[in-house]
Image 1 (cartoon, rainbow, N blue to C red):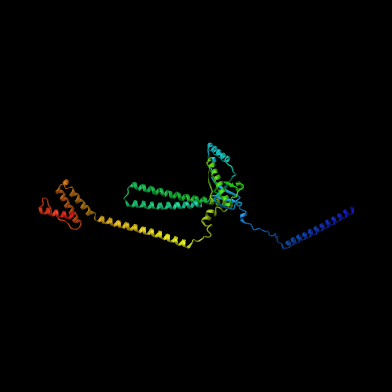
Image 2 (image 1 turned 60 degrees about the vertical axis):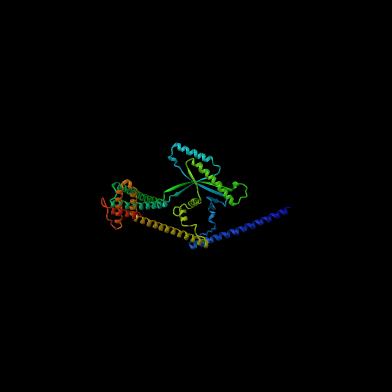
Length: 407
């Protein structure tokens, strides 16, 4: 036994020496290689760095969300859904003590009603006044056009001489008011443009982030679409509850739609360039219209025919309206031309009916004068054949003339 143990110990010692020798050889080789590399670097006079290796990774690996749909942010491949409520803050420092107490009690009530986790997120943005300036410019153009109209109207009134001094003063007052409004609008645009040059004009927005985990459903056999619908219903209910409880504090809120969520995340990930090229400009530029699918040819033809029918129908309707107006105008002109004859006939009929009132002799003389006016208008001046106390022949001629007119 002693001899066997001695042999084993000897073998182990020999193995250890062999391993130690191998390690020493590897160490000296590595050291010699390092010294050779350093010598070569010093000899070339250049500090060469070892090249770094990079692995290709998807940009979505750095994002905390997968997609945005149905006013929700989907994260972790459907393992979490998020809905965001934007809140408008209140100026707490300018409130009275009673109002401050009401706000605090309302916020305590809001905290006590929470039955799920939330996150309060504040985002500071640089105010972009470009859209405001564009709106102001459009308004100023409308005011300028109105000012030109009123200026022309006032000049016409002044040159016509048909208006009283009171009317001219009223028109000048309206003109002055519009001119002052125009000058005030130009000052607003100038001030706003000066403010837009200042990059320190900031605005803070406040958000309540509401998460939902499908794990809350427990064991289930729902597919992804059903889980998404359930998540939306639950998140919308929670969001409306938060909006109602925050309204007690005087804080108004609204649920962000998909476009607003895109803008929120865009500003969060592009804080420096958000005011230069925002989401609204990207949408206007048509970033989501890189390609389009052409409709069916027959559908295009049908649409073109429908448009043509509608256009020709409008044109025909307008033409018939013009023709109807022309016919009516002609009838009016014809009646206008016959107005004097109709007046004479009606006047003689009235005299005939009222002989017993005005007297037969006076009525006859009046009818005779009417006939004279008619003949004179037609270019045949009628002689007055009946004098005061006329003959029977004149009376007979007058009766015959009256019979012809009545016929």
